[in-house]
Image (cartoon, rainbow, N blue to C red):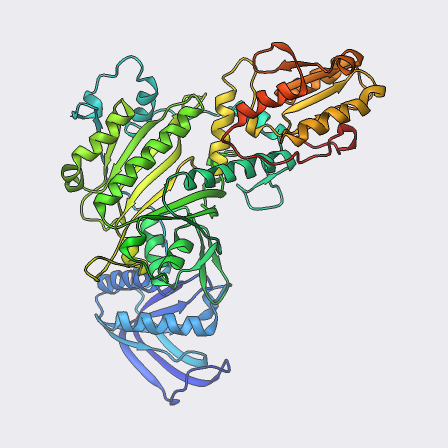
Length: 605
C-alpha cells in the first residue's frame, strides 16, 4: 500500500461519474472537510487485509504530529503501477476506514469514481509526507534468548562459565556458533560439492534460486532414502497413516495464517490476484487438515501420520548450499498423535533414541540444542529432560525462549552434526506441539466420552532427504577410499570384461547378480582394462570385477572392494551373499541405467 498524506486547511470533493462498472453506489454530492489529514491511498496487488494495521500506525503517527482529529481516506490508484483488484482494494479501504474511525473523525471518498477535488495544503514541514506500507507478515521477530549448558549430572551452567572437556570439541563448536556467533564464515566451496555433482545432484538453472534437479543416479539415491525414511516410521510399532496432498495453502484460513506467523520468516508466498497462498514449509498443514475431519477415539492413540512432503523456505541466496540449504526440500515428516503430555513424553523419548540410532549407524554422533519455551516447562519436566540428556551421554545446549509468547510447541530439539569444515549442521529434529490440535480443530474422545485436544509430536528422524544425503557425503569423504553405503550406490557391482569377446559371458553373470537384487553393470567399451578400472574407481563403484577367460572357466570372480582395496576370489553366489548381508534392512531399487555402459548418454557432472 502506498499513501500520500497532506495536512490541509480543507479538501472539497465532488464525484462526477463512475470510473469502473462496480463502483460504489453513492449519492452524488459535494463534500468539504476542513482542517484534516488527507490520506491519498493506493492498495497494491500484494496487499492483504492485515496491511490495515500497519497503515493505521502510520496514519496515527502523522495525525498526532500535525495535531488533527480528522482524516480523509482518498482512493488514489495512480500512486502505484501494481494496483489490487477493485474488489479487494475496496474491501481493504473499508477495513482501514473502520479502524481509523475508532480514533478519528473519518471520511472515505467514493471508490471507483472520477472525482473533482480542491485541496489547500497548510505548507508546513510535515504537511506533505508519503509512505510505503508493506506487510511483513512473516518477518522473524527479534527475541532475546538465554542459553545454558545442561550436563547429564543435572548441572545448569552458563556457557561463558563452562569448562569444555576432552572429547567435547564438536559441542564447543555448536556452543560458540549458537551463543557467541563465532565460526560459519567460510568462503571456499565445500569438498563434497564436486563429488555430489558427479552423481547428478545440481541446481536447476531454469528455476528460482535454490531449487535442485536430480539426474538418474541422484534420483535413485533420493528414492531409496525416501523409502528408508518411510520404513523408519513404520518400524516404530504404532499405526502409521501415509497421506499426500497439496503444497500450498490459503493464508485467509485462520489456522494456516496463525501457524505461519508463529513459524516466522523464510516463507514462500504466491499471490494469485484473488488470494494469497503460502507454500508449505513442512507437512503440517496437509496432515492437520486431514486429521481434523477424522473421528478419533482414545483407543486409536497413539498413531502417526506420515508424508515425504515437498516443502519450501525462502532462504537467502547467499546461504544456499547444494543438498543442505535449499528453497525446495523434501521433508519425511512424521506427526505422532498422543493423548496427553505424559504419553507424548514417552514417544518423544523413543523418537529421540531412533534419531540417535540412525546417525550412529553412519558412525557419526550428534550434538544437541534443546529449545524450550518456558522455565516452567523446564522445572516441571526436568527429570524427563535429564533422561534425554543421559541417553546422549554428554552435555547439551539449552536455549530458553522468552516467556509469554504463545508458541505452539514447548520443546524442540535440534540435532546437529559438525561437518568437515567444522560447522554445526542441523539434521534431525523433534518437538512437542501443544497448540496446533486446537488451532486446526483436531480432537479425540477420551474414556469419559469427552472431547480432548491431543498432543502432537513433530519429527523428521533423518532430517530432510537432501540433508541426509549431505550427511552421507560428509561422512564418506572422511574415508581413505570414499564409497557410498552399498544400499545407496547406484551401481553396486561393475563387471569389466578384458575384451569384447567376453561381454556376452559377463551378461550371464550380470543376470544372475541382478536376480539377487544387485545393481550391476558392464563396461563394454573398447577401452583398456586399466582405463575401465580407473573409471570405476572414479565413480566410487563398491565392487569391481575383472572378467576374462580364467573367470569364465573357473566360475570364480576376482572381486576388488573399493572400501578396503582387497581383492578376493568368490563365486557369484558368494558375492551375492556378501552384498545381501551388507544391505540387509535397507530398501532396494533396480539399476536406473542401461546395463551396458556403451548404451548410455554422457551425463554432465
